[in-house]
Image 1 (cartoon, rainbow, N blue to C red):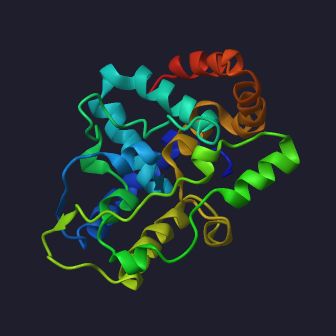
Image 2: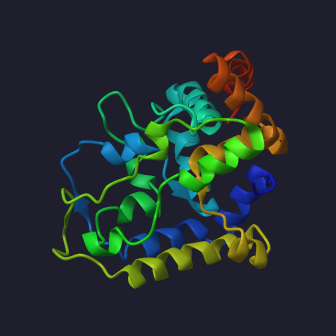
Length: 245
């Protein structure tokens, strides 16, 4: 996990260096898309975001969604701790109407979903089998078969204003441009080797609960996996809900 960064210093640095404008200029290389709104991708999990994208989403949440602070914090906390043991976890920004509540600042992963051809999308193994083995061997935590065997399928319901799929190398190049913005916040070798592309709730827990969030995760997962209870989780949810944006 990335070490926590002083959030408002990072936001100030991003503003002074026009990093949000740089991010938007990269987004502008993608065509506009529409879909049928089934939200299958949103229900599958929280998409990863680069750190600059997390800051962009955080700023939007702070400035435009004051009435949703506590709800988003609660959903993000629960997702962070239970994503591997509770198949019902969905993106914290999926609202009651099955729509994205931060659509205008959604990360690159969401913006580019559906733009690859089926052949390019299905290259590689995205299952959780190896991760499930690791958690069982090291922590005696069983990841449910439903999660282990689930994979986000290629979506043919996304319509692009460009009318054609985009080459995988082009999308990879745009993602790489976003990752270089994160050099402003972290050492370049850390960004390149460990990566700053993390699920939004992971970034949020770094901000809200600090460096100890990951250490507590195993205990929360094990309680839920073994007993189906959330007593320990609820203490962290209460702490998160008290966070001031």
